[in-house]
Image (tube, rainbow, N blue to C red; front, top):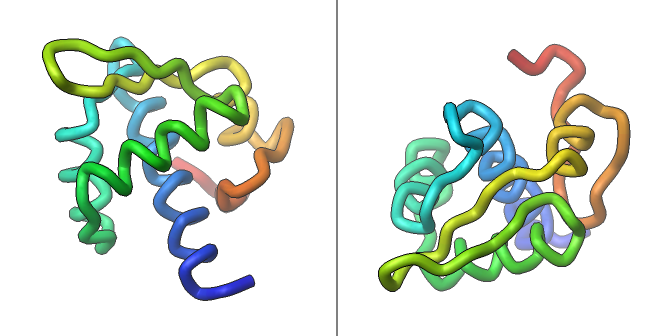
Length: 99
């Protein structure tokens, strides 16, 4: 696996973890840029939107548009990945001691 692929997988995991911690299980792309930046992934909104699209294709999120933003909402499949009940291609596995 290339370093770029590793970073993508880690960033997508960070997105899923962030979504799972919100009260409504949703965040827009602007907030996801900030979230991933706080975790050391300084990427553009275009990159985050690409990650959201990948997560939608795997069934981990539902993607919607609202007021020029892209909103991602975690699905049961995304939660199952975080709980280690399933594995999503292109998304890092969470540690077994996830908080």
